[in-house]
Length: 221
Image 1: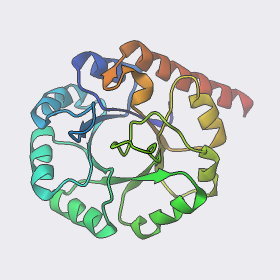
Image 2 (image 1 turned 45 degrees about the vertical axis):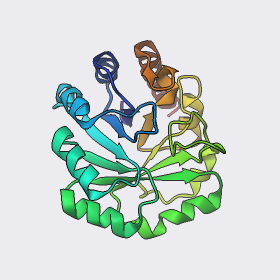
Image 3 (image 1 turned 90 degrees about the horizontal axis):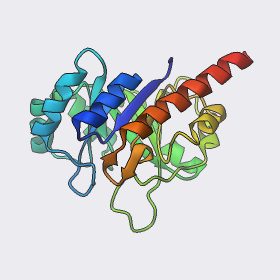
Image 4 (image 1 turned 135 degrees about the vertical axis):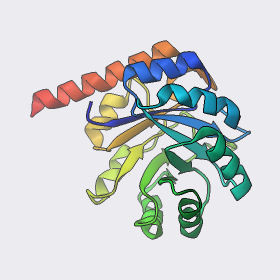
């Protein structure tokens, strides 16, 4: 496959194996205690070793301070830091400088105006992740299983590198990839049997759906 695929919120060896065997380019570990996908750094560090040479490890945090990031980076040795909170461009730059790692900055999207918020981060963040805005009352900035109008992203410049996230699953990934052409896709709740519980079979189904979408697209060229 020519598109990056990130399976996020991994906590078990079985789910990690399914992600790696399916061809994940990125595996994500979430460090946010309010999330059902939260994992302790030491645990994530042990899981991460299985991905060495196979996929890039992404550490996902939400407005984490320097001490928390230091502990995560020390235990996990991530390839990428994903900042999924309200981090400013200055904070993104500081995190990059402190850890010497690329940063992916997440943004919540509901309408076209939301995309304007990326402007001050261009040239600072190495990649963007576009997720749906959380439903009212949710304490989670991502992993809520809701999507947004993907067609909004068609207005972006071709040189904006982003991962598409939010409510993706095996049933709708074909439509999503037909609507827009992201360089990467990110999925978490769409491959779960319950919040925080990854289902290896659903992970396999998702990879199959992505392959089918890619093959259909190639056939039309």
